[in-house]
Image (cartoon, rainbow, N blue to C red; front, side):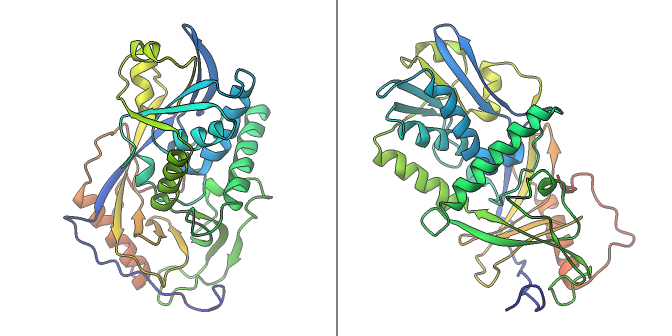
Length: 349
């Protein structure tokens, strides 16, 4: 079916509130993410955290920067500790192991991390950089290295595919992306959904990185490469000092605050509804004020909330019900006239 002229199938929004609701906590750092080295006692620590909702999007690019920093300090066989079991830690560990360094990962958990709860669209959402030409260039270089790296991994092995994203308007996230990666959107006089509440919109072409497949394959790759994964919950700098490795990469996300007080690092909670798989849905959807729909092989992920400074990962049934109700209105051609939208509805970050 021609996605620009034909009608695409609408999602089935049936879900079970007792089993299909989760919440993810984004590690957002005001001003900019932190990607830099510092000396802590006898150790060189490379910080890599604060990427907000762009963790998976930026991970591979940030891992290249970490590798560049470490390469000046290490040679084959040098022991390196990577703190954190999410996508930032996994991608860093993979690239450092490819340098023939002796990599050990330390994390509170190596499953059900914040990254495992991510939607997976490639888009730099909920992340900022400093307002300087140099910071902008660095950010765009990270995006390029990440995007090109993911392009080289497209296929079922890592769960990466190209996907169209239909949106109501040009989005702030994609405006941050260099045009050699994602072209400016195509204006559509009519969105390809029968009975949709809005006629016109935009079409982007991006990537979908499916967290269950991608993260589990990274973990498998690392275990096959003899990277040790040790469970440890870091709560003090003394635990860091006790590590034998002279080089440490901090990918703890919000957990970084326990070791390095950082008032700029705050949580942003997002509610998620995971619908049953629907193979007929081969598109992504972002509709203000309805949030987003990311159909994956394992689930169709529906979201669209933002709660700053809330790190309780308990899902809120009422919020999730409202998100589903808004999406149903959109695809059934309803109206929002007289309906007051809650403050937590995301507005195209």
